[in-house]
Image (cartoon, rainbow, N blue to C red; front, side, top):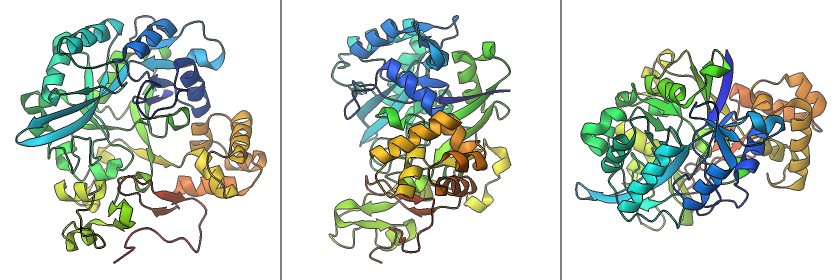
Length: 425
């Protein structure tokens, strides 16, 4: 079986707070380094980026997937799937809702029709690769279905407090509350960096919803920090329609596993108040009635608490064999940085990263499959092999992210390490 690693959600240089390096040829090169086989184009509603898509890509044998025109080397093997993220901000049931959605499109023609429909409604698609629109989520979904039934909408980073379907600040308590009679068309949600599949499985309402994991990359280096691994019998089986079918049906024979951040590393995992440096677990937050013990203002309620509020089962009651498996990773640059005790963006990390990629293979291969002895032979510090061994075994130390601050995951144990939880309690 051919294993293909798929990242369905990234951005372009036209999205706010995103790298100017996010152009399709450079994205393809980053995918080669990372080991991503099929990558989102991102931002196809933006006129400048859509023009770049049409200029740089060509469809692969009417598969609904695209490749770089005139590409050589390994970049020629990278496939792109038409994808964008949109921001819906609107009033519904007496509350302001702020939701982000990933929209996968079957072909260029369908995207052109969607752009026309958005422009008819005077939605500004020029200012941001992730356009902000006043459409209700249900209304947006109906527009997509009216254009082409093969459009596929996935609620993005479903638990993020501020912009998500289940977000504590502006979301809903269920898919049905959001999409009403169109809810059966929602067959998947994106778990986001601050939650993992196990946390989501605490909600029986999601038992028949496929959980996908994507990077939401804002720079080349972040591509593939979370991803999905699908299996295909042969290359000719790989198409947009097959990918959507696998997701819709939750086919466990072909959806092999998801690749996950440790959720504690996500910046909204725990509850807290960043300005007061307060980080709390759900039981502590409840004791404080969601009020910061320092400034007495309302805490930002993170993913862990939000899931705790909506869950109808404990982790012990989950039957893992019923669901698609998952594997945790720590990005390779972070692994190297932890060994050298420098920042992930340092030149020292870059040199060692390039050394490992050149001599061993892609980042995902190194993190998930490479022989540990070979890693030890190639690496300039043997502790890199030990760190990857620990990562694969789940032997990590974690300090959770909260209120917009990323958490910390250590793969080499530190006796002085103190988690952020219970800082004041």
